[in-house]
Image 1 (cartoon, rainbow, N blue to C red):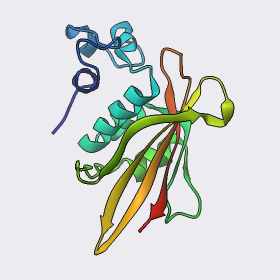
Image 2: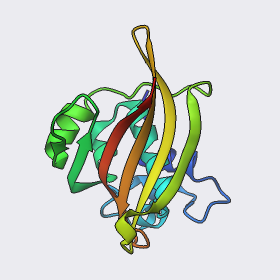
Image 3: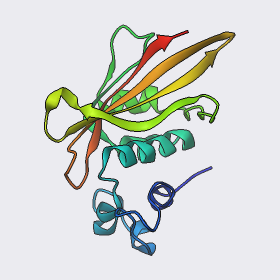
Image 4: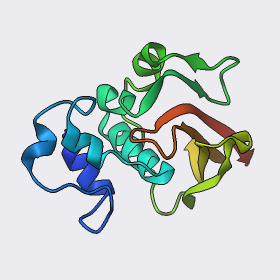
Length: 166
């Protein structure tokens, strides 16, 4: 299953949303150069992470990377050091689609926790989910640090998963 950036934005930002832009203009140029796509690019942190998540579910590494900063970091509980840089994260982290989160496993929806470190223009989006690995079940917190909040194209600068409980 494949989606254009425009269809992903439509799925995240419906006609009532301030980031919605109707029409075929969205498909004419890549997001970084198209004025119509810049107008539809999700500007609030939760919409950005939702759009990013849809590209992860689709397994589209390039579309997923478009929502991330060049110096993005990704940290998982099993790793001793994070993946660093968009090239490494795309190759190793975005190579396969993300497993879907079912309603039964979603404990809290995407939400803004706070400004990261009190810095203006930076926000942390979190959600808690139940994951099953083999017979073990864990509760984890997924966290995305978004920079450039309030700009035309905020980016995900850090992603992490932290084990909360069994």
